[in-house]
Image (cartoon, helix red, strand yellow):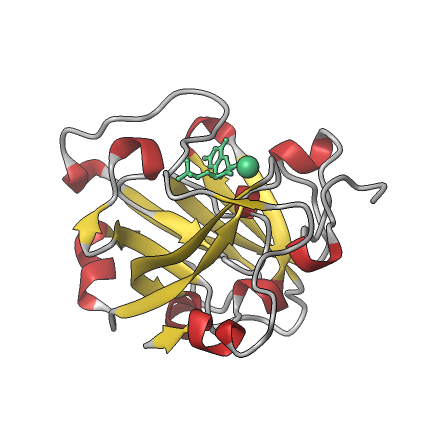
Amino acid sequence: MYFGKQRKAEGSNRIPPNQNVTTKFPVLHAGNVPHYEDLSKWNLQVYGLVSTPKLFSYEDLMSLTQAEVSDDIHCVTGWSKLDTSWQGVKTTEIVREVGIKEKAKYVILHAEEGWTTNLPLEDFLKETSLLAHSFGGKPLTPEHGFPLRAVIPHLYFWKSAKWLRGIQFTEHNHPGFWERNGYHMEGDPWKEQRMSWD
Ligand SMILES: Nc1nc2c(c(=O)[nH]1)N[C@H]1C(S)=C(S)[C@@H](COP(=O)(O)O)O[C@H]1N2
Ligand SMILES: [Mo]
């Protein structure tokens, strides 16, 4: 288990510049909320610059080592939510399953409806990065990404793809949905990397 808040509570300020704390849980996305009747048809494809590309069923993911991450999240539109807790599988655990090739430097997260986001491999593999199936101990609600979403708390929350269906490892940095529309390739809230020109 890893508790980011304990680390950050030691610092004097845990709110990144120009963010406001909310106790609500806003729902933000482009496109439609998918509803799954039958998870036996759902899978997660992990591919690209890996030694063994794999297709994980929901059951496969549940049989991997389970982990919990508690941390603050920061949306680029200005809200931050403190002490969110997520349960799922560490990104490092998935990488252990497929093996990363040396050339891999970036990751593209693929969601339903062709939505994507990109991030450096180093950020994807950070200790606090999780593939979450649950929030606060309960399965994700459809609006928040059921059955599986990425949670990358140290970057603006748009990098945390809901309705995750694919993880692709690449050599080059390919802009995703918001990144093609001007959002930052990295998205560090502490550096206020909101738009690509920030
Ligand atoms: N598939 C998908 N994931 C997405 C988005 C999206 O449009 N599509 N929006 C992102 C944005 S901008 C934010 S702030 C968070 C919001 O997550 P929440 O609705 O659970 O608060 O989801 C991120 N993940
Ligand atoms: Mo966002």
